[in-house]
Image 1: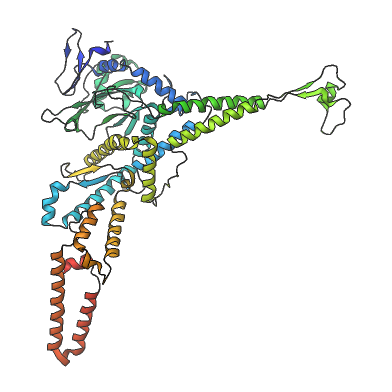
Image 2: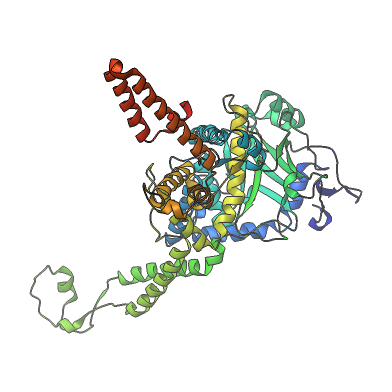
Length: 577
């Protein structure tokens, strides 16, 4: 294997791999690293990845061993058990809360936000356009939510989050819509720049040849003659999936680049039909790290920052288990040469009268109660600290449709406080990539889902109370209406002091509500009042002209018109007028 120090990073293409002649060469051909992906994988795997893997396995042994199992593990193998379940409960609890915030019950997992700067000229010409846009986007969000509910998206996301918390690094892979997956660091490598941006990610996967498309099977069998000698159902091959960042030379922003994704065989042959280009926000593979370590390819785990307490829990409970076994040991001793018969003691039943002396019989006692009590107090304090860091003692979220915005806001605040802002980093980085990739795949697979232009509509992944999506907009609109009614009640002198139109516009801006089409201007209100006055005058003139001949009919019409003017009009009635 080549020395890891020989390869260099290229800002535009990703990697430059040393060839056998010793010269470094950056291949400009698309969907190629310049060398087989297998060789590049081996090169990056030797660049300090094993230390990160070993640390992840140590943290898994303290929490959930199956998250990062030992080398060579297969399903069904016995895993080293822990002496406590506090670590497992802590990780599962925090992962469940992070999943809850990513997939709010009954709510879309993202917001489709119109870019107002691009749409404002059209909104100025038609103020009601913004409301129609919001309505259309809300229906698209609901379509995405319903499709996501049919996939294993939330289940895979929980496993991905557990890997991040325990091992510090995890690969999110979503190539086809129906198959979102996650993978531990033992199956992938990546290379990052000094700012932590991924440049190239390679996933090594062993697949059954019989499950591949016909043309791919033929390509693999052509390269590997040994597979033809095996039974069809036993044939396995190694596929290398590559996701490389390609920078846009016309821009200085990293986000303006795109991704190239393809799959190779062990011989370095490109598999037909697997090459694709993706925009920066929707990569097919994303190498996630929990706590970034800039300048390195891999990060650290959340559990690692509290491993001192986890060691206390593991060792302390191990000592308590041994102490419990010692305390349960019951041995009786009879004094040699005493007056008490050993045989009589062995054969005696309850309440039997024996000759002898009770002082001749003693019972073994460990006398470790004080020591075990000290260990127990130490464990309780460590468990309390772990519970605060992993929100074990926080309020339990309801898993139903009636979860309130206040509950979501409180959970988001708890996450940010406990994780030191790490929750927002996870949501804006990893969660955004997951959601955007799903939306792109759903748009491609469903003909009834419109492909939204990214320059007019952007995908918003928001944390905290805003994660409730449209329900927050609904609550904001209701609060806005209540605020206007409370400030300007009928016949109130407040209107002589405050400008109600300016007040309504400012209140909407502070609540994040776009007033276009919602708040009428002063000119619109005056024109509407003048129209009502003209209609009232016309009704009175018609009544006077008709006179007694049309008395009952005209009087009823005038009364009906007066009653209609006194009642507040709905938006639809106002539009019809």
